[in-house]
Length: 195
Image (cartoon, rainbow, N blue to C red):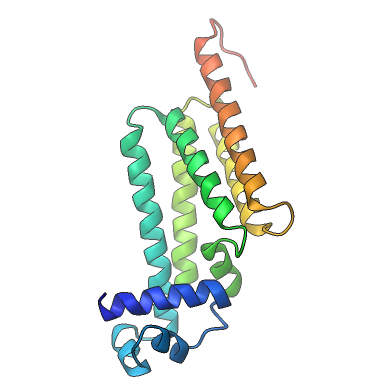
């Protein structure tokens, strides 16, 4: 594995286990099998390393959206249902330590931190994507539907210890299924019904 990738993998593992603030550059370099000087050749600062780590996670999430879109071309309702199931499966895994992006936001309160800006821009794009999908899926109030999904997800990320991520994931799947079924019934109804 190239040195730059080793550094990112080591940093991600340490950030996830110990928190961003709890990990120094020396520990990252050591875990990557290199030294601080080499690390700084690839990343100008720890903040830039954190931002690049976040970009990598977001790129992976964007790839998942591309896969969902390809698998459900012309079927926004099916896409939303598949998305809810994939998200629920990921939430089960997050019960131990929570969301890496959510944890990063909590540890990086400075609104000008480069990683925080990357995360916030991604979250804004993802919310807009969900609104567009809810419109395409035929929900009568797509903004409300998207916000319900979004609040459930954000609540799950913030509430690892209360009832567990698995329960939130199950509820997300149920909510999406109910709303999709409601939209399908409205499509079949001879007269539109207001909700």
